[in-house]
Amino acid sequence: MENHIKIIEAIKEYCLGHSGSYEARPFGEYPICYKVMGKIFVQLNPQENFYKITLKCDPEKSYLYRQLYPGIIVRGYHCPPVQQPHWNTVDLDAFSDQELLFQMIDEAYECVINKFSKKAKEKLGSLSVLEFRNTDGDEPDFAMLCGRLDHALNEIVGSHYQRSKYDQYNQRDSIHDVIVAYHNGEPVACGSFKMFDETHAELKRVYVEPSHRHMGLGGELIRRLEAKAKMNGYIWCILETGRLLDAAHMMYKKAGYQIIPNYGQYVGMEDSICMERKI
View 1 (cartoon, helix red, strand yellow):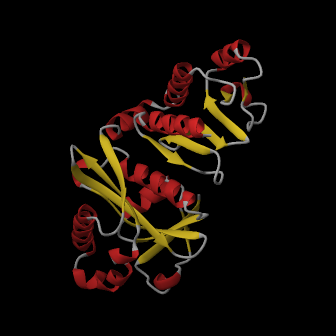
View 2: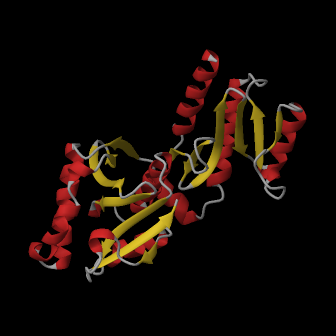
View 3: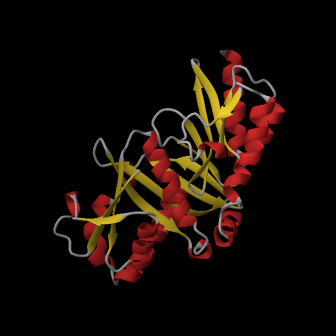
């Protein structure tokens, strides 16, 4: 099992080394999935009694690998028949060629991004120069970006007085899950969530510096926050945004969020729009 742990860590490190990749667990504790721009390219099952990896692949290559390693590389175990030619499952207990395994991970990643539109590929290129760090509400860079967010909101809404009633709901000491994006070591974007109840995570403080907008960074932060919330056991993400914040409203709508009746503290606040998405 010790050797398994080393291989699992090597696979994780290798998958996360691909531009724009991140870990997610959309189906529960296992499999551990690796995604790029919301699309899965690797699914890893590290259990001792089910030690397998499932990889996106080109149908012709997938058939070749199955022929070369019969019974060890098989059609994607989890897939419906129509999807099986596009996925291979490798029995890691019986497969020892790490170099070929990493080659298949590269091919899995390429299979996914080759399906992206030209615009999506351009966004991925822009996002690939960024570093995403997991932190908490005490992070000074997060505090600085939150200050800039508040300043921007005050300018849009018209005055701090009109927004002061929301301040009590945006305190950083209640936020423990934060992602900050960096470009050349400088913080350029952030997002976070906090517990609303046992099944709902509330997205908070999503902000992108003006210099890094229109490159899909807001959407990428949302995807990564959702993945992290799912790993923490939440089923839904909810959020509040302002009626005057058209860009934010459209970003969340594009990410799959739908308007719901105002919840909790926002009930009766006519300037608020509340939204949700099952993750």
